[in-house]
Length: 165
Image 1 (cartoon, helix red, strand yellow):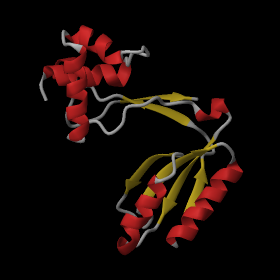
Image 2 (cartoon, one colour):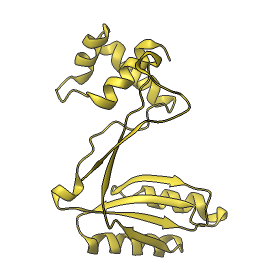
Image 3 (spheres, helix red, strand yellow):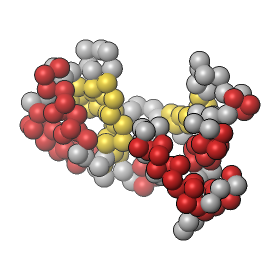
Image 4 (cartoon, rainbow, N blue to C red):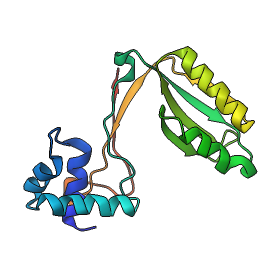
């Protein structure tokens, strides 16, 4: 990645313009054309540097419910379980851990009943029990990965700022 890519990633993480042509606006900030900027984004997506570009909504303020889920999935069923879980649009994160409960994901749904129904369906389709762990207290953590070393980026650590919500 060059300095344009790093600056582009900084803008996308913190100042993504909500306009009809965001890459034209970002490109103007960087001294690039809209096409050059979009090509860089697509290249970084193809390389897996950018996994997702999208809005983060405060689901509670919209009346939706959110929960953390965990499952102990045998290695032989891992790919199937992950594929089934990832079919649900309410899954916002899905990751592996080195733990008895080796798959963790967050799930957002319109109601507790709908979440329970969907988790029961996942269990029925995969044969794997899913723990439903709704939060008792919610903490909002904002993580931005500063990409330019001159901005104080320490490659050996991540800076987290926390805000109670």
